[in-house]
Image (cartoon, rainbow, N blue to C red; front, side, top):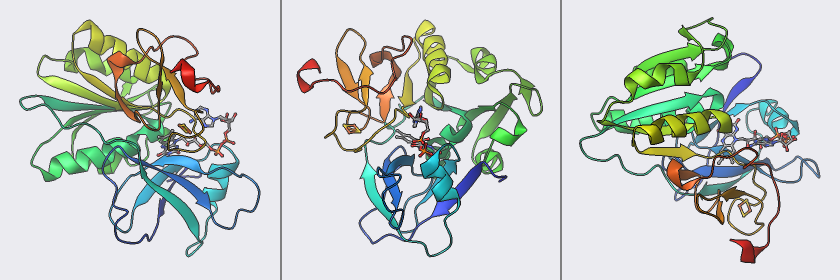
Amino acid sequence: MGNAYHVLTFDVPEGMDALPGQFAMVRGAEWGDAPLLPRPMSYLTGGTRPSILIKVFGEGTIRMARAVPGEPFEILGPLGNTWPGATPGKRPLLVAGGVGVAPLLYLARELHGQGQKPIAVYGGRSHRDLPLNEELADVSELYITTEDGSRGAAGRVTLALPELLADDVEVFTCGPDRMMAAVAELCAQRDIRCVASLETPMACGYGVCLGCPVKRTGGGYLYACTDGPCIDARSIDWGEGNHAPRRIERGER
Ligand SMILES: Cc1cc2nc3c(=O)[nH]c(=O)nc-3n(C[C@H](O)[C@H](O)[C@H](O)COP(=O)(O)OP(=O)(O)OC[C@H]3O[C@@H](n4cnc5c(N)ncnc54)[C@H](O)[C@@H]3O)c2cc1C
Ligand code: FES
């Protein structure tokens, strides 16, 4: 999968089974002091051998990418909510950007197992930013976009959406905030339900540190780890700078 993307598979005890949309806080047990905090990662698969897809970004994901077979990890999960159930009569339209494909591929496999074939739109900067696209094609009707035109249609994922946003679809999206904001806007214009899986930076992952606030439409805050990560896009204020990490007081909620 090139140097940037890696799939890590873990052996975990029975009873840690995760559903599509949930995430885990992941940290190498032998990392020492740095990085101190675990990193939130969506489940790509569940069961007793769950896996995650990582994009190498900073220190934590570099350490994950260098992990050797048998290396011990601390996995706190499953955390957060799941993708909501699909509305009867609606066809799921999955919109993925880059590594945001992980929770959507898990969802697509689940839907495929139930006899459904979701539509999927998957975008990246270039053909190198489309990890697991073949696996997604196996379980969906897949449309690919790349910003440099090296694969699929040239442009952003939102380019492919207008003709796919029919009355009988509902959208599930995960990717960079700006992409999800644009997807949410297109859906809102057509009164189509859109659920976004947020990748807001997190410290604890379970509601204690207040480090993952997301502005709520109409005022106040949602917390990505406990109210999400899967949240109805209409309840999020997608305004500029919404997801910059900041600490707020509990009373502000
Ligand atoms: C619920 C959830 C699910 C996620 N699922 C995945 C996944 O499946 N695969 C994957 O590769 N990544 C996923 N992420 C993002 C991943 O957690 C971050 O990329 C990771 O924490 C970066 O850690 P790092 O140590 O490599 O980089 P750091 O050294 O921690 O980060 C480098 C810089 O990026 C900033 N930063 C860190 N995290 C983010 C972020 N999420 N958004 C914007 N800026 C950030 C930091 O402030 C810092 O400036 C998910 C995040 C969340 C909240
Ligand atoms: S990450 Fe700590 S409250 Fe959400």
